[in-house]
Length: 227
Image (cartoon, rainbow, N blue to C red; front, side, top):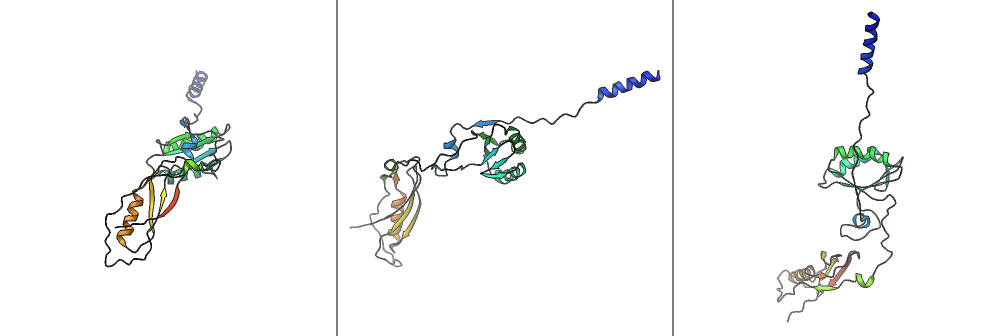
């Protein structure tokens, strides 16, 4: 009886033992980027650039690269903490080599757990931003004035004005949309109202749309003749 009891006890103990299970890795979900040049290679004014303007992580079998620099899983996590804490929309563009899946999963899974709303946008591993100086259509990209601001009907010279004898010169930027931005007075006429009208005349301007042509820095001397 004693021998049978020992055998049964061992059988029960063996049946209760199970090997420790490996922690399950949550599958990562990627959104494939359909037009990477449009999405990744344009600056704040939508002008094309020869470099990425979004955060990009690159993974191979043994390396992690972040924004063009060698990195690591820990450095990626530290960067994400600083970068995404003030972002309402969180996105990371990802390039993974044929043998880099394990590295990517190991580095990205903790990020997804920390930031469940983080979007992983995958782009082909070999994608590079196209060079922007290959073709520049001078004729198409030349700005054309569609309208200007209003001109004044009268100007008052105030006692504190000190006319310089020069016309006001205004500097400004012409965006690809045709809108005017960055308007600044570069040379004063010494007459406050004349300078203000010159600024308003430039600010009220509108040019033709020139997508892909970049921002043009310009300046104009504004002559205001009143009869």
